[in-house]
Length: 442
Image (cartoon, rainbow, N blue to C red; front, side):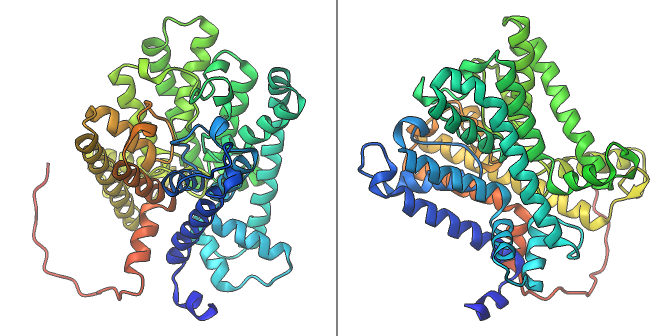
């Protein structure tokens, strides 16, 4: 086993780790006492749910509250926690707690898993990630507990608080509100300020990335001292929350009372980028609004975070590259720092991969199921962006269409470049340069 591990690249370890977690979760969810009817879930339902949980997506084929037993819900929550923090992060943390020495290979894998700039200090950073994760999840649970305890009683209310705090922080979107109305998500709390603010805060904190936390802890509010990556992430995140919220406020939820209108606009803008909760009826959103949501879902969160998607930095690099071309500048840059050509090529590759997966999956499901293309594209964007929002078609999809969504969720969580590097690992790069010839584009 050890020799096999040595032969595997970091990228291969990451994708195999996620696959192993999904398979284990699937087997546990198939146990008789994982479902309320004591029959156990079918392999198809268990595999879909386990993939959605580990990939922190939130798409479901069975209502979480009414179909799964308490044991099944605990398994789902554990899978969400492992998937949100990352399989490698959890493994390194457990090894450190047990007193085992962390090998250089494990440190290198951890570095790639959380997009850290260097191997040095990776164990310390892992400890910091664990502490901050526990702190924010506990804080979120404590804040939401009074509301849930009042509505569901002390015991059930506490469980709901913990479940939704972890699900929100990990950007998973799983909920237990089916006990009120199946597949209803948080629509019954559309005007509740405590639930709205707590869930949105957890989503954003979990989605900005572990290295950004480290920057905030080290440099406090001294923005100029942050890493370039942290600056790009924070500014891009702020814009991706504010601009869509303004659109939703004026064009999608204009008939709601002012309080609900504000919370609905902000919540849908935040949750669309990989969280998967919703407080509004998405089937009532216009096609223009759905198109904006699709774009937000594809972007997702930030590198080294609990969120999926092609990442805020990818969008920022592509936009900055376009601006550089328009201004006839040679290089892409942010805050007085030049972005390497390798980074620009990687961003272009990731964008191409996500668009290809999203469009191909949507077209296939539309043809197979005979459903409107926009509805299917919304579903595939939700899957590949590991979001979990749906227009209600997921439970009715056939086995082939569900399999497409499973693959999209998996690809979306482990990351496009990770999959590429795992596939081509070991191939020798060719340093020879071919003759150059101009190609006109645009």
